[in-house]
Amino acid sequence: LLLPGRLQAVVPVTVKALQMDVRLGSASVGAHVRDAACYVCWAFARAYAPAVMAPYVPVMAPGLLTLALLDREVNCRRAACAAFQENVGRQ
Image (cartoon, rainbow, N blue to C red; front, side, top):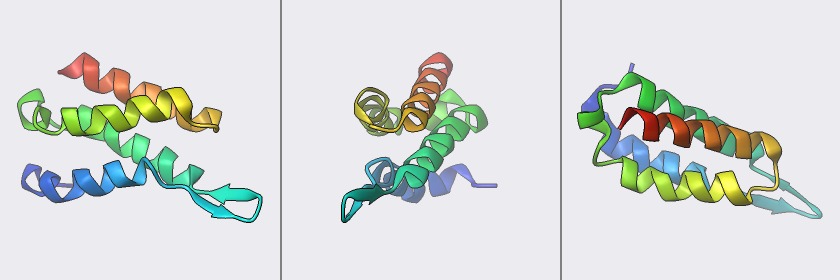
């Protein structure tokens, strides 16, 4: 359980995780982290009232849109779409 007062510290870390991509040779690592960050954004929309989330939606939306449109992993694109739709639908 995350109290609404802690969102100020957690949302920036989550937005940073949406951009996680580490190159290791010809492969990259980070798809699981990006997918988990999308799930966290989705869960925030479901768990908190729109009044609580209102200051954080403009911070999360660009990262989710970028991920939904440009990520090379289809699972991450789908997760970002779901999280973005949930946030838009509840605001």
